[in-house]
Length: 265
Image: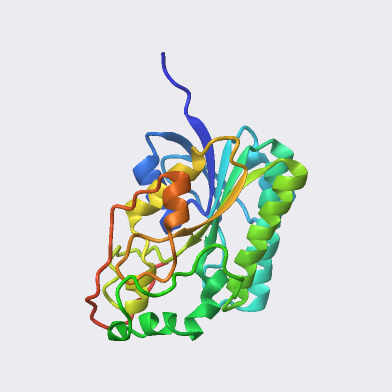
């Protein structure tokens, strides 16, 4: 008997992470996309997340939403972050609630706690001063550390986590929030020490989102740091390992050649 695939809507399906999910998990889920452009090969709704009424039909019959769409720039101006991250995220949660969606996977960010990069020992990692640290003998930032956003972008991601908590408690909409490090088009973090620390490889990206989609229904809400198992990590990923059985397959080392990274999209 043919098993019915779970219906998963990806907001921002045309972006990098959306493309990774469709490529690596497309045989497992019935994906659809909600984005400003169509995605070839899957059902696509073209629309702006700022318009709740216009996007709502895309949520009909959906089991899980992976919410990726946003202004992805930590340098994003307030007006853009307000429209594309604050208002858009509210509209996604509201449309999901109204449609009876069971769970949202929210692409949060390391920038929720980026203020810690100003402090020792973490600033030494960002600057590549690995010699000033002893391997595995410095504090890692966990999900229990205080919120320290480094930008409007980081503030918006913290808002998304709080919004998810509200919708879980008062509307029964489960949500998992992934504080994603850095997913790169090239899948190669060797251009800076900062990238080495927070890199999340393509296959680890697919794995951790897959685990969130399939977490037990009894697990209603959570926040997870999401990076690969990098040598000079800043963020503690043990919570994802123990709770989701996350087993990262990739690990960035210490070697890098400093150069500018140019994002393609």
